[in-house]
Length: 105
Image (tube, rainbow, N blue to C red; front, side, top):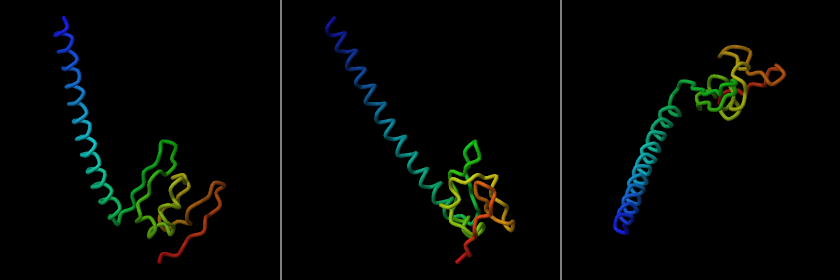
């Protein structure tokens, strides 16, 4: 009985160790893929935006500065619906008033 209990405990410990190694491997793979994706997106001349289901921008690529006249950081947190297309009147604030555009440098 004691040998059987010890065997079960040993098997559980080994299983947990294998799962831990798998998790470490998966975490490293995910980090590599995130870095690859980030380098592709941030190096692109295309504007890439990620919005939450409610339309609030969660990510804006750096290319937005040249297209919208304000930094990507300024666009994050704004509503996608308030963002006019390039060449339009510009970004609008919470009350619909146009926000000032910075001149591209």
